[in-house]
Length: 92
Image (cartoon, rainbow, N blue to C red; front, side, top):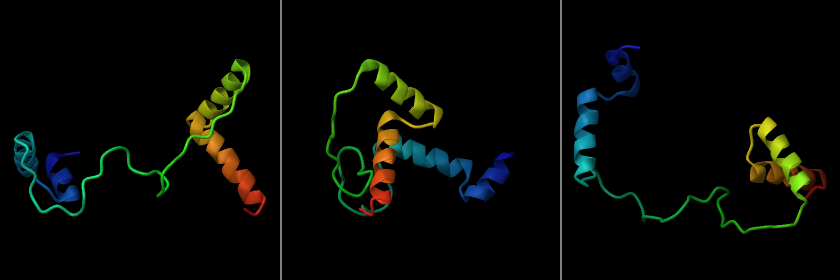
């Protein structure tokens, strides 16, 4: 894709990107703040997360990790999806 096509698609020129990059390198951010600065990771589900832990054998953890990987998920995503599915089927 040509630069001119990208500029048209995204509505910004390469020159403007360079200007913004140069300002950001100096610590200058154009515009006005739109809200408070929040430190840390953004909330994934709109509320604070708490750890839920249980013990499992290394071989079972390997099985869990393998299944999660085959589904393209992280271990926590996989386990969370199982809990979500169970709670939904229980009408929670």
